[in-house]
Amino acid sequence: MKIVVIGGTGLIGGKVVAKLKAQGHFVVAAAPATGVNTITGAGLAEAMADTDVVVDLANSPSFADADVLEFFETSGRNVFAAELEDDTLVPGDKARLGSASFDTWFAQRNAAGG
Image 1: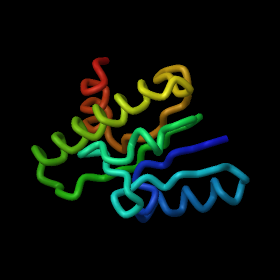
Image 2: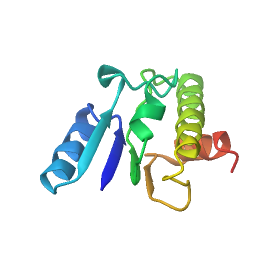
Image 3: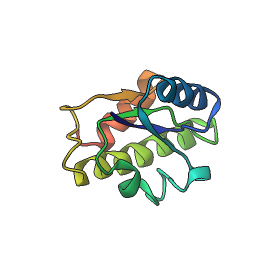
């Protein structure tokens, strides 16, 4: 199974990536450090190709309320668009996990048109 972990080089994401790899999954640690940027969209389409599951553990670089909201709206919109481009990953049909708080989940949901 191919699993993309958004924020896969972070404190929690790195541990998730290691555990999933240990279980035999093909895992993409999607982060700016690996060439995947959810804000600009750079590398997202390539990372999402033939993906079965997306685990979104990204975190905003700023904790100011407006910055956090903008980060998750933009990131959510770009990740959702990349999911739609990949015909093997249909949002709502395959697993998409993440969003640590209600506010970030709501921002991503609204960005995705939900």
